[in-house]
Image 1: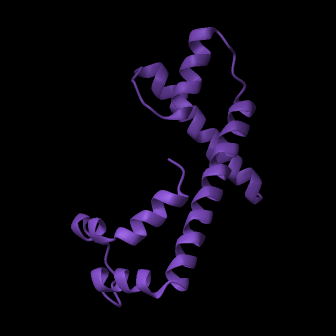
Image 2: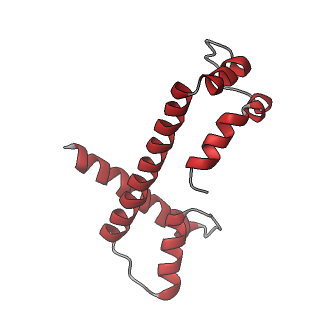
Length: 121
């Protein structure tokens, strides 16, 4: 099995699992796939699993691209501006290998500004 077939299998499993959950116990989930499946059922549209797969892959790739670009820009600013890097080090520590807590995140004013600027809301 090649990578594309494996990825397709992963996506098809997600679609089938979601369809089964909706059939067994309709619930109000706020994810895009649930909305697409429920709307198709309400409108009597027979949604092809291949079409759903294609739409999910587009969304997945777009999200991946947005995340990687935002991370790249954030790292660029940390490297370019020593004052931003100094803020991070002073709050999180020079060799911090633990996740920051909510109080530490609130103190990261420059990093928060970068995130707000470059991650679509």
